[in-house]
Length: 224
Image (tube, rainbow, N blue to C red):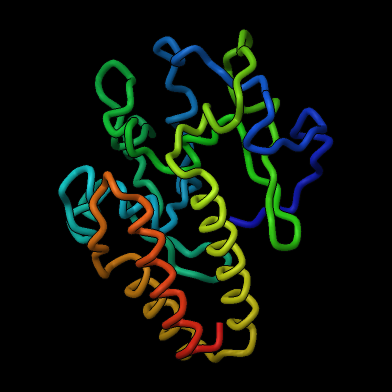
């Protein structure tokens, strides 16, 4: 999701790399789940997120669509997001104690919080959101430890690729008719989300390889 924001208003003014220390550690949140509620459709999922949930829960994309994820339009593209409970406004993966039931394979946006990504040309850096987290006694932690993602460099390369691809799609949509746009949206959804990935959950690198093959297919077919 692309946002035009003033970094001075939402961050501490610094940009961080994976090896930097940042004041983001909430000490296991200690029962707080405020950031898992009232988020509407803002927890947009990338293909890696959906692959992890599908593999971790043993459910297909279609099964996840039954109360766990939903589709919405983001910057012109049809993308999945977490389907918050209509009554509690909470994440569908919260248990009664307010703890995450899929913590080991939670979405990238959840892993980041209270960090965000600042994109600049062909790379991104991390920034600390200073108004979002209710915990006031956060301590410093290395960014890559906070994220807890194996082979973080490969993941960062994938995120950069996916972000650039979505920007290309948004640009292309401006020149398409409504019917053509619909065809593109459905094709991207089917190619990157609905078609199952064969990679096992314990082998994240295999996912990146599959993703790159699909990315190349779209590049050849649509020049995107």
